Amino acid sequence: MHKLLVEGGTLLRGQVRVSGAKNSAVALLPAAILAESPVTIEGLPDISDVGILSDLLEEIGGTVRKEDSTVHIDPSEMVDMPLPNGKVKKLRASYYFMGAMLGRFNKAVIGLPGGCHLGPRPIDQHIKGFEALGAEVTNEQGAIYLRAKELRGARIYLDVVSVGATINIMLAAVRAKGKTVIENAAKEPEIIDVATLLTSMGAKIKGAGTDVIRIEGVDSLQGCLHTIIPDRIEAGTYTIMAAAQGEEMIIDNVIPQHLESLLAKLREMGVTIEENDEQLYVRPGKNMRSVDIKTLVYPGFPTDLQQPFTSLLTQTHGTGVVTDTIYQARFKHVDELRRMNASIKVEGGSAIVTGPSKLQGAKVKATDLRAGAALVIAGLMAEGTTEITGVDHIERGYDNITTKLNNLGAKVWFEEMSEEEIEQFQNS
Ligand SMILES: CC(=O)N[C@H]1[C@@H](OP(=O)(O)OP(=O)(O)OC[C@H]2O[C@@H](n3ccc(=O)[nH]c3=O)[C@H](O)[C@@H]2O)O[C@H](CO)[C@@H](O)[C@@H]1O
Ligand SMILES: C=C(OP(=O)(O)O)C(=O)O
Image 1 (cartoon, protein in one colour):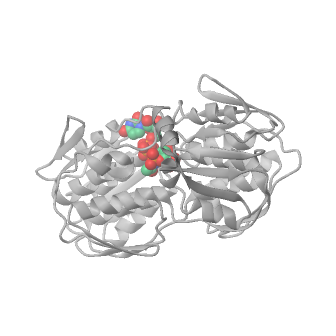
Image 2 (spheres, rainbow, N blue to C red):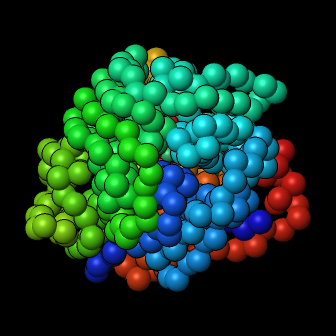
Image 3 (cartoon, helix red, strand yellow):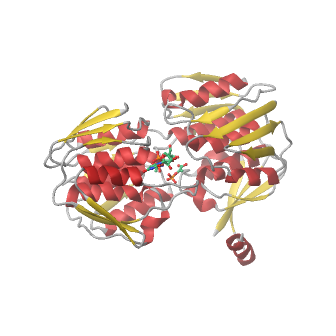
C-alpha cells in the first residue's frame, strides 16, 4: 500500500494533456459485450477502474488486448457467467454489466456495485427500466438477478435524472424488440459518447444528449472502432489547479463546451481563461473573489468538481457557499481540509468556505476519488508536505497524476507505507 506526498508551494507552469473520460470508458467497455465481433476503443485512461472492468470482461470469456491507450475486445466467446461477488464490488460502473449482459443474453447476475461513498446511491431507476423492458429483477443476498424471455421496447420515464440509469437502459434496449423511449434522460457528454459507440456498432439511437432518447431495437450489433472523449472532470481538476497554484498553464485535449459551468465560475472569481477548440489557457487572478456554487445535472456545475473547487475557495477572498444537490452528503473532504487549516463549516447540505486561509501540510486521508483530488490541490497550495493516504481512490480516476503534475513543476511522489502506517490507516 502506498501514500502520496505533495510538497507545497511550487507554482505550476506548462502544458498537461487530459486523458480519455473515466465515466465514458467505464460504460464503453461493458457496451462491447453487446457486439458479435471485435470492438476497438482508442484513448482509454490508465486508471484502475478500466483495469478492473477489463478483468471482468475476461472473466465472462472475452479477450481483451491492450496496446498503450487502445484496447481490442473480442466479445464473440463471452458467456452469461454470474458475477455476484469479487471485482464487481470494487467500482460503481460494474452496474453496466447488468444492462449489457441482459441485452446480449437476456439474463445476468451482478453483485451490487461499489464506487465512491457519497451517501445513498440507489439503482432503483436502473431496475425500473429493466423491468419495463420485460426483465424480472430480484435482489438475492446482495446480487441483482435479471432474467427475461425476451426484451421488448418500452416507454420509460426516469423519476430521477440519472447518468447510470440512462446508459444502462440504452445498453439493454439496443437489442430489444421494437421501440424504447427514455424520458427525463440524463444529458451528460458521456451518454452521447456511449450512444456514438453503440451507433457505430449498428444500433439505432436518436436524441442522446437531450432529455428524450429514442431507440429502435436491432437484432445484432457488430464490432467497430471508437475514440473516447476527453475527461471533462480530469480537465476541470487541472483547470482548478491552474487557478489555485498555476503561473500559466495550458490544459490540452479538452472540449471547452463540456466545462462551461466551471469556466463561468472561475471567470467570475477573476481567473483569466482563453479557449480554443481543444485547449484552455489558464492564468490565476490577483486577489480572486469567492463565489457560491450549486451542483446540478449537466450542463449545471458537476458534483464531481465540487470537492476540488472547495479547495480553491480556501484561497479566495470572502465566503463561498458550496451546495451539492446531487449528493447532499458529499463533504467528507471538509474534515481533512480543516486539518490543513482551512476554514470551512458544513451546514445542512452546504459547505461554507471562508478565505483566504494559510494552508499547512498535514497527514490526511482521501475518503473518495474527488476528495483525493481536493487534497492534492490543497497540498499543492500548502506550506510544507502533505501526506495523503487512501490513494487507491485517486488511482480510480486520475491517469498518471504524479507524472502529469511533476511535468508541470510540482513535487509529488508515491511512497510505500510502513506496516504501522497501514495499520493506522485501516483502523481510521
Ligand atoms: C460511473 C459514473 O458515471 N459515475 C458518475 C455517475 O454516477 P451515477 O450514475 O451513479 O449517478 P446518477 O446520475 O445515477 O445519480 C444522480 C442522482 O440520482 C440518484 N439516483 C440514481 C439512480 C437511481 O436509480 N436512483 C437514484 O435515486 C442518485 O442517488 C444521485 O442523487 O453520475 C454521477 C452524477 O453526475 C457522478 O458523480 C459519477 O461520477
Ligand atoms: C463518483 C465518482 O465515480 P463513481 O461513480 O465511479 O464512484 C466520480 O468519478 O467522482
